[in-house]
Image (cartoon, rainbow, N blue to C red; front, side, top):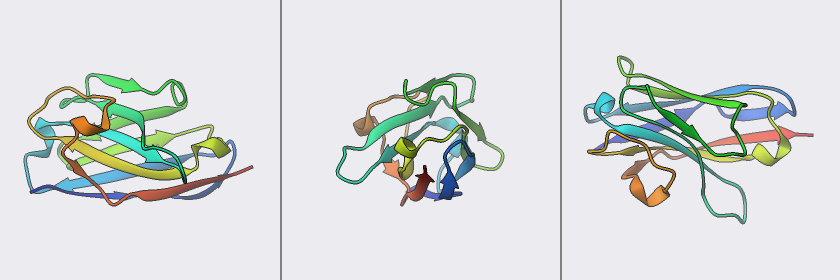
Length: 125
């Protein structure tokens, strides 16, 4: 069993920054790829960013490329999402997820096995 707990969400003005954290426990966290997704009201859950097991490979949705950075600290069992130049359209609940048994990331939600409870990010204009 894996537990993922997100933190760091909140209310920020457009152009501001937030850093989300996702703390994992229960398995060898550093062996698996991780991802961040988001879901706005009335919309499907969408891919934001993913990182491979070592942190050496990352991928981003076009909508956040150049503004968001995913990273991980396997010694702390934590993955981060640094969000800069935030826009109102970034408003959503952000979820972290883990691909058990997989070293590389994916942009497909069904490729992930466990999810956190989510953290709300609200960007005001």
